[in-house]
Amino acid sequence: MKKMDRLTLMASFVLPFLLGACTNQTEQTQKTEPATDTTTPLHLLQPDYPTPYGAPTIDEVTKVIDRVYTYLDESTPAKVIDGETKEEVSDFTSLPEEAVFVQGDFRLTSYEWGVTYAGMLLATEMTGDSRYADYTKERLGLINKLANYYWSLGDVDAETHSLIHSVLHPGALDDAGAICAAMIKTERLETMESLRPMIDNFAEYIHNKQFRLPDGTLARNRPQPNTLWLDDLFMSVPALAQMGKLTGDSKYYDDAVKQVLQFSERMFNAEKGLYMHGWVQHMDIHPQFHWARANGWAVMTLVELLDVLPENHEGFDAVLEQLQAHIKGLSKYQHGTGFWHQLIDRNDTYLETSATAIYTYSIAKAINRGWIDKYAYAPVAMLGWNAVTTMVNDKGQVEGTCVGTGMGFDPAFYYYRPINVYAAHGYGPVLLAGAEVINLLKSHAFEINDSSLQMIKE
Image 1: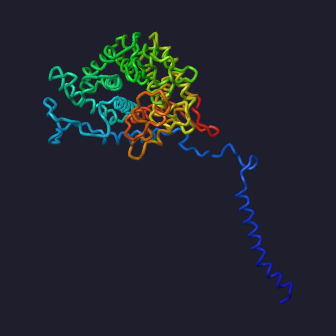
Image 2 (image 1 turned 90 degrees about the vertical axis):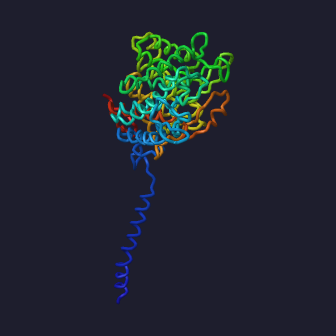
Image 3 (image 1 turned 180 degrees about the vertical axis):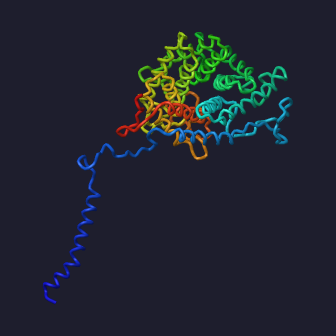
């Protein structure tokens, strides 16, 4: 074979290989070449969001609510048993001496469960699924049977043991307010035996027996004399407001409005738009620790009051202005993940679930009632809900909730409060938030516009 022929033959084998190698190298170079302003529409790059971004569907929200319901229905049985025989009690005209509730994960008469009962009622209202409201009716019905039994015995004094001591003899606003408000909401449904004797007992305690400052502001004598707890707004005002709705007696509305305005005068930081947790009369300086859940109780108090307060009441506009100022303040401090911090204005404190759920509920409800700008605040509520969903585990338990918390005047107290899946404070707010978000999704449309969530202009 001639030399030229050999070269031609080699080329026929080698050139395609070399060309292929060059092509592959070019493709690899193109793949690794960075996206630039001239090669890629950078504004369309997808962020790596740590929590879901965008508007959920109603079905997605309902599935979260249902997981929580399923867990709570199984973990908080509405049963009384004989502690000796372990047999279920069905006759509530004569209880055995050792009668006890079947032990569940949570207490059926706590203020936290008052929030849960209200959340279940709202979930039925927004989804049409009667199971949620039935949860509340079954448990409040059981408590009612027990109350009627003890009252039938005559004077059951405060020293007498009973399964529902805090219902018969409330000794603090914690015992009375939240569960009373839930009972009134249930009573207004008129679908079961009346809860009115228990309701009246609670209302009498809140309106006439709880300790107050000379100007009528509800107060406690712990941890210091003449102390205002921001929590006590929620432990009193919604029940007073609901009593106004139930009875038509304006004295309850008047007292509810007075509490909001007098607490706010002492405890609201107008510059930050946040409440301090505690105020002590004898202190010259009032330390400002803006604890998240207490601010949640406050903002939820405002929406619960406005929900039933007649618009022609002389205090309506002042309460509405207070709500608007508080939501404006809270929104400034929302973390990029959608949560809020344990101490709202201290970014090195942990992100907390129960407060995030309460804010989400309150903001969504305020939008749905037309009390705040829906275009400005709807994305805040949606981001909050998306954050909350990441803390509802497969069992339906709510994670990331701060345990029950007293009052402190140093940062360490709040920074290091434990979180626990059995902290009952998280469950009712998640149900309320989900239900109100469903209501928001029913009446408003959302879109991703230039990568950001927007409520569509009507």
